[in-house]
Image 1 (spheres, one colour):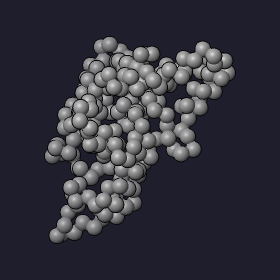
Image 2: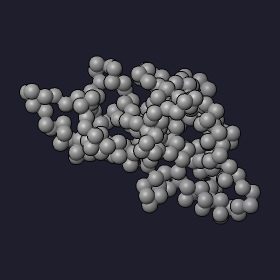
Image 3: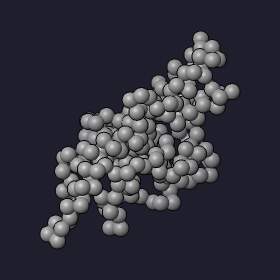
Length: 211
């Protein structure tokens, strides 16, 4: 889980909410296609086009706007941009395992769900070369519950992480080549994208590349 720094909400979204009047109050269900697209695009951009939870590549047709604190909570403003993220998976294909926002659904426990908006969120997790995510501290109930509730260790995601790790294990790479490879991967590209499974690569290889 990579830390996400929130930006200001898109102007189109602000302008739409500003249309509120005595006869109409903006509601998330009334969010128009253009305004919703502006919100989703802004979320994807600030996340470097990786899922807010598993860090898989976000695609427009396979992602959705995620409310970290669920809309079902009456204390939550569904139009609060600071509570919005972008999670992978939109319409599930038959037999596709649910994970991330789709699996979490409306479950929320502030004590047990680690937020990608927490600057220290990355410190809660450790990564292994076989693609597994585990609590950095075995006594960290929040990390363990977060992994479970988001399905971060389902076989599909473990296999994708292991595939992302594989190129960094190439023994043909010289030390300087390895360092450049890791450093380049961890930088946001000119298209504004982070590499998939950023924290996995940073956790396993970042310290080695810095030596």
